[in-house]
Amino acid sequence: MKLLQYIDWDLKIDLTLDPKRFMRLEDELIFIGKAWAKLRAWLLKRYGRFEFLCVLEVQKSGHPHLHVLISGVPYVSHSDLSEIWQKYGGGYVWIRSINSNVNALWYVLKYVNKTILGKNKVYASILFASNKRMFSMSQNLLTMLNIRRNYKSQGWKFDGTVDEFSLKVFCREENVVFDDFIKVKVTSLLMHEYPTIFNS
Image (tube, rainbow, N blue to C red):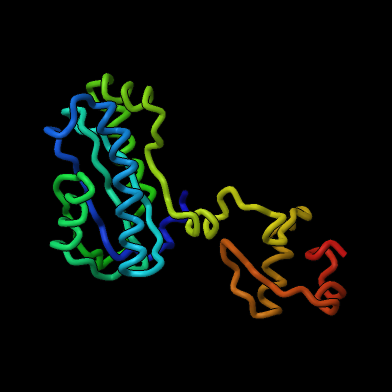
């Protein structure tokens, strides 16, 4: 999750529901996920591919709403978004551009902790009983962050570990940036020169 800080987020969107439309809180929890799926489809059709991080928060009143970070869509008209969200059965919409980097891990934990650690545990219990995830992210973002990677389909396999000193020497000599992720095209020459790195 700490890798989320490296994503450049463009927009922050808050989505609420109109509680007058629902008889039970359980209905709101079921509905909000379906409405968000429809809104994602609309955004994709209108603006093209984008990445998202969505956090479900249960307010003090027990009503759920969503906090969403969007990457890859620099602008969405508030009136258009509000109109389509209400068409899908939602309530109010707040949207703002993000000019500076956002600590997305803090963003997730802030709302998760508000719900779970809040004074009224009844709403946390309702959320738990509804079996809803408190946050979700786009599939491509999951892949970029190496979460639930399908190793066979992407051709990755675990070959072992390398000590940090050897890796730093390799990076320095081959002009490779030493970072959280290092991607190198392996050649027979590299395998010969750095056998401890490439396990050859």
